[in-house]
Image 1: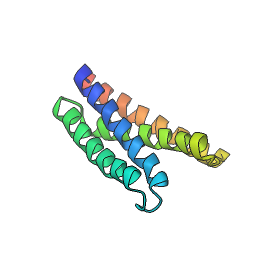
Image 2: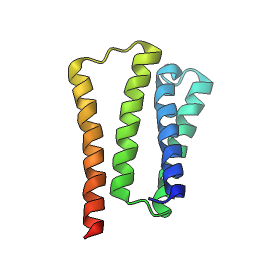
Image 3: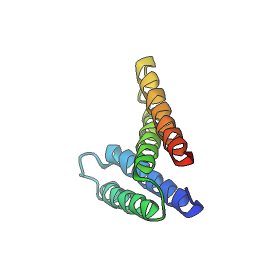
Image 4: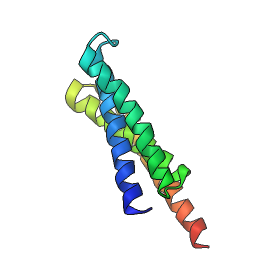
Amino acid sequence: MTPAAALLLCGAIGCDVSAAVSLKVAEGFTRPVPSVIVVVGYIGSVVFLGLAIDRGLDIGIGYALWSAAGTTLVAIAGAVFFRERLGIVALVGIAFIVVGAILVNLGTAHVDAQ
């Protein structure tokens, strides 16, 4: 992954997390500012992910990292900002998501090395 692709992927993840957290605050799209953040955030997330893929990021790796990081960070944000509880089963599930993304990344790197 090139540095440019990594930076764009981070932008995609940041936009995704901002949009997802804003969904809670938008209260069913009744609050204008958080509602705009939701829409702009999701559009930005997909645009940045697409640009990262265009800069050489493998789509499988990009999507795996984007979704795993987004899921993990949104769950943490929910717990920190909204006092949502994460039980042991949820934490184990998040761990599986992260491990899965790592395995996809390692598996692709292994295939590229051959």
